[in-house]
Each structure stands twice: as C-alpha cells, then as structure tokens.
Length: 164
Image (tube, rainbow, N blue to C red; front, side, top):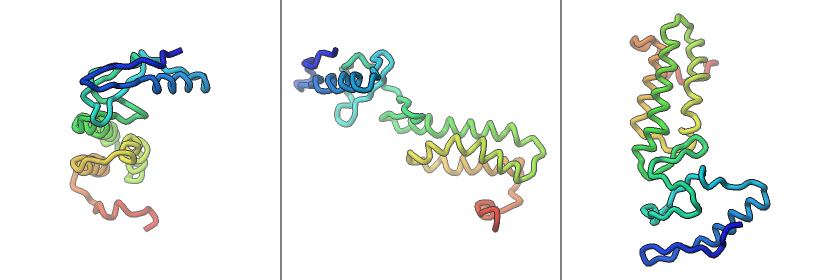
C-alpha cells in the first residue's frame, strides 16, 4: 500500500502527492492492474514542465515519450521528426523497393494504399501536420507512380475516384 501522506517541497511550493498515490492504489485494487514504477514514464505539464522532482519512482525523461504510437514532448522539432519525418523516410524506402518493378498503375496504387499510407494515417489523423511534410509525402507517393519521370497523368486526375 502506498503512503498517502507523502509530500515534496520545492521552490517554496508544496506539492502534495497523497491524493495521486491513493488514486493509483485504488485503481490497482479495483482493476487488478498495478503500475510498474520502473517502467512508467511521465511528463510534467504546463508551468511545472521544468521541475526536477521525480515522484512515485517513475521515469521523468526530457526526450519525447511514446504513447499509443505518438511521440509527445515540449520540443516541437523533435516531435515532428519522430512522428512524421522518420515515417516519411520509411514510406519512401518502401515505395522505392517497388518502383523498379514493371507494375500497372492500379498495382502501384494498391501498393501505395496498402504499404505506404497506413504508416502515416494514424499520425496525420491525431496531430497537426507540419506544412513542409505535405509536399514531401506527395512527392514520394507520386514518384512511385511515374518511375521518377515527369507525370503522365495530372495529379488532379489522380485524386479523383476510380469510377470517374
């Protein structure tokens, strides 16, 4: 059982941790799930982001923390790199493997939809996409269709439904 009266004093502020300890303990008792303090990563939010305390025995990293496949931190450049740029590079390399094959345009479209776009779809649906990433994504996707040649089909036509 956690000690529910623990306190930490910093910068003439009193940070009471008793209620959080109690909540974590109650959650574990009700659900049967216990937090493993040695594996749990946590971030200070808002005005507390520069605190140095490390309560509960959790890890309090300065680098981005991965939660549900998304990296979270205060460093926007680091977030964009890990959430978008690395995935765009993987997209380009996967499509590059298939570019050398003599496939029809429908096959290339299918490969792009199955192997390329799902890598980015989750990040794009949750986060704000940096403006410099959109042209990079378009270039890597459309270059797989044209084998690095000039587009034979206008991109506006490519965006339309198959039935049109």
